[in-house]
Length: 267
Image (tube, rainbow, N blue to C red; front, side, top):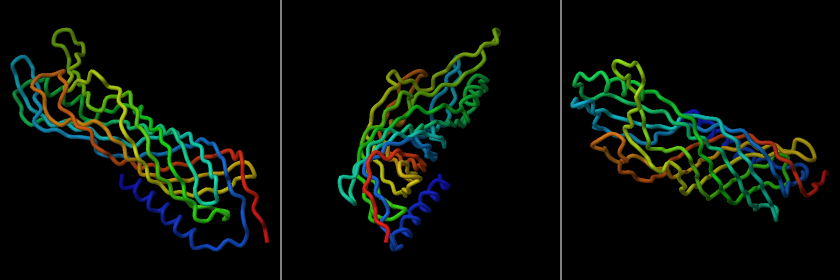
């Protein structure tokens, strides 16, 4: 998380520095582009809950559970259009990932080996991310005729996920048959979700050739996700939940095809 924030701040400093340079010539302007990018998304805490009951044939323990978003790679498809020199529009589909990492800490010990095994199985468990954001927004470039063009960006849209943010499962060994049994601490009957998403970003673009440009962008992805808000008395029950905003910082580099451009002047 700290590393991603540092990269984002460094990118903003580059944007500010570029704004102080006076262009000696008028470079080409990209008016309409489509491209593909590869990005890195940082980590953030998702939710934590204390005092959750674990049951094992009359033996009762309590434990603390937590879930966080771990760093992951993602893919972005985007298109931009500038009807004027400074202001433009952007639309993107961003595979944000949101891969999870879980944690568990036992708070009491009744002597149940199964409860301890469930907690140990959950602690450090990871799952892949399948979250996608679809957004549209506005771009502003203060130096439209420079060779390297800094810009600011603001988006709004939706975050779509097929992976539950609240379902949590551990396993223990069935006595006598040596097979694993699933134990759902929290259940979720409707894992798919659609929630709002916002994004604020800054970046730089530069022409690679007459028909291609490269884009480097740092972005604060603000996504609303479901969180566990309370405990359940029995396993495999759906817990109380809330939907709250989370900040996921990303750094993306993309290559785009320039479908239309304004010609610059050299003098």
